[in-house]
Image (tube, rainbow, N blue to C red; front, side, top):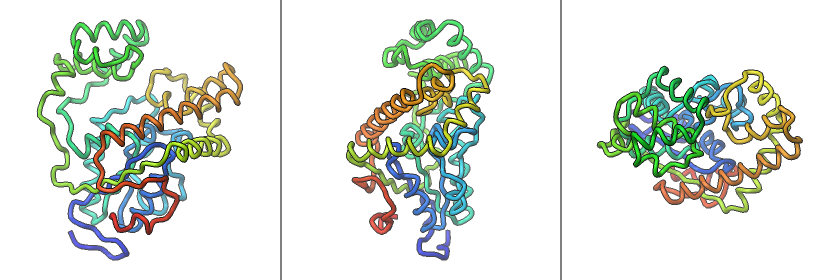
Length: 314
C-alpha cells in the first residue's frame, strides 16, 4: 500500500486503536490522528451505534464528522440489540475497505469487549436469529431475570455461575446462544479463537487519566449534554415506548433522564444520579483497560488537544 500525501502516511494493514474510559478525550484524539494519517474514524462504542441519541451517547457532532470520515456511528434503530459479533463483522469490512482506499483506520471506543475481540480474536459463536432473540426477550419480559437465570442454570450452569441474576443483557445473550445452537455459551468459549483481521498491524493507544481528573470531566460533560439538548432526545425515545431492557435504553444518562421525563423524579435528582452512574462506569472502564488491554503507548492524562505529545506514536 503506497504512502499518501500529507503529514502522516499509510502503512500496509495498519490499524490505530484508541481506548479509554468515557470523557477521557479519546474521540478528539481519534479525529486528530485520522486527520494526520489521512485516515478515518471507526466507532467501537456499544452505545454510539444507536440512532436518535447522539448527544447523550457523546457521538461526534456534524462539524467533527466533516473533518474526517466516520463509520459505524448511529447505525442501529434503538429497538435493535447490538452485539459484538455484528459489530466485529461490520468493523472488519470497514477496515478492509479503508485499506483499499489507502486510508488508515482509527478505531476508537470505550467498549472493551469490542476492542478485545478485534485485536485478539473472537470465539466462533454464530449470530442468533431475530426469532430466537425475540423469544429470549419475551421470556425476560414476562417472567423476569430470576426465571431466565434458572433456565440458563439448567442448560449452562458454568455461565450462570459467573453471571449476576441482575445482568439481564448477558443472561439473555447466553440463553439465546443455547436456544439457537443447542450448545452452551461456555462450550463455545472453549473453542479456538477466530481472528477477523489476522493481517492487521495494530498500534494500541490507551488513555489512563487520574480518577479525579476523569471525574471532573464526566461531570462537566454531562452538564454540556443537558445544555445541548439531551432531554429532547430522551423525550423522543420516551415516545417510542421501548422496553427498558433494550441496550439503547441503558445508555449512560438515559434511565435517569427518562425517570425525569416520566415525572418520577426532579431534574436535579436525575442529573445527580446520572453523574454518579457515569463516574462509576468510567471507574470500571479504567480498571478494565488497566488490567485487560495491552497497549503500545499510554497517555497518563485526558487528551486535551496536545497532538505533538502523541504524534510520534502513530
